[in-house]
Image (cartoon, rainbow, N blue to C red; front, side, top):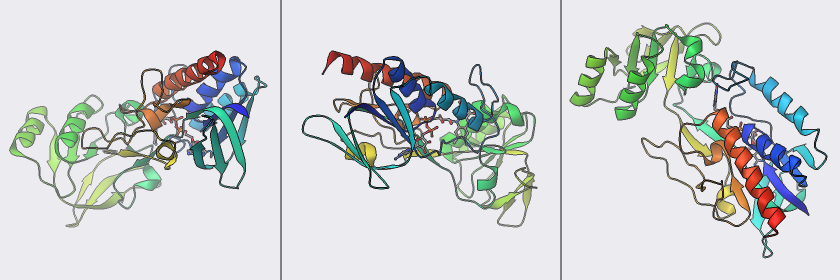
Amino acid sequence: MRECIVVGAGAAGMSAALTLGRARRRTLVIDAGQQSNLAASGIGGLLGHDRRPPAEFYAAGRAELTAYPSVEVHRGVVAHGVQEDDGSFAVTFSDGRRERARSMVLASGMDYRYPRLPGMDERWGNSVFHCPFCHGWEVRDRPMGVLAEGAVGVHGALNLRAWSDRITLLTNGSELTDQHREQLAVGGVGLDERPITGLHGPGAELRAAIFADGGELPIGALLVKTTLYQRSTLARDLGASLTEPDEMLSVEAIKVDAMTRTGVPGLYAAGDAATSVPPSMAAAMASGYLAGAAAAVQLAAGY
Ligand SMILES: Cc1cc2nc3c(=O)[nH]c(=O)nc-3n(C[C@H](O)[C@H](O)[C@H](O)COP(=O)(O)OP(=O)(O)OC[C@H]3O[C@@H](n4cnc5c(N)ncnc54)[C@H](O)[C@@H]3O)c2cc1C
């Protein structure tokens, strides 16, 4: 039996594994290799790694883990997990392999869902983005759109003025209240409520949003409202509680306390999977570290 299974080797899972390895705990990391920011050309806002390509960052993390003999990192997908009567965790991989451990860290990241419009996928993480702190610098001073409705759209558009003074809120057919219209007008933000049919530009670059009436708006970048869902039912299957996404809190996060405990004894959650505030690499690394430390303390204390 292992001492800990970590699901996911992104910033959170590798940070947890590093902490567990340094505490000499027999740790198995299982990772499907789909870290959420791989589409981006660089990591924005991670001190010491600012603008570093994500794949390079993850390769460096995996290399650091090889220094710790008690840590194994395997490529694979955890398909199912249960807590046994003795409190240990049993997981089954999609290839049928089974593993058991006395504790578990869920660091499986999130499924970022944004409006499905033609032209979004190929620009995602670069000229189409969900987080201005991550990508706003790279597209600064371009004319930009914000694709979102209601109060979230108004807030997002006003906030984006830090990166450009040519911002237009695109509501894709939904109408704003008079109060919201006034807020945008006072803030110098444009408004276009026409339904959108797609995005246009060469390759991953963005030149314009195209409307259903045939018109277009020249923009060089687009901020889109994104809702984050769990990537699988693993957390629920293991008995963890989740938040419900709503308009402002667009995240189905695993509920944890300040030490990343889920409430299920021995089960910890870190990174995006357990983050109900805007997610980031820095926050994922910090919570992964805490999860690794909390699991190591639990194992050392023998409870
Ligand atoms: C396009 C994009 C760009 C971003 N840019 C930035 C940025 O510039 N700066 C910044 O600070 N933040 C950025 N973020 C946010 C940042 O990437 C996340 O906050 C961070 O990656 C979360 O780390 P994580 O370890 O929790 O999850 P992830 O990095 O998503 O890693 C989770 C890992 O778990 C694996 N996994 C999931 N389920 C299973 C399973 N059942 N079995 C095995 N493995 C599994 C996944 O394949 C993945 O490899 C960006 C996000 C996106 C979507």
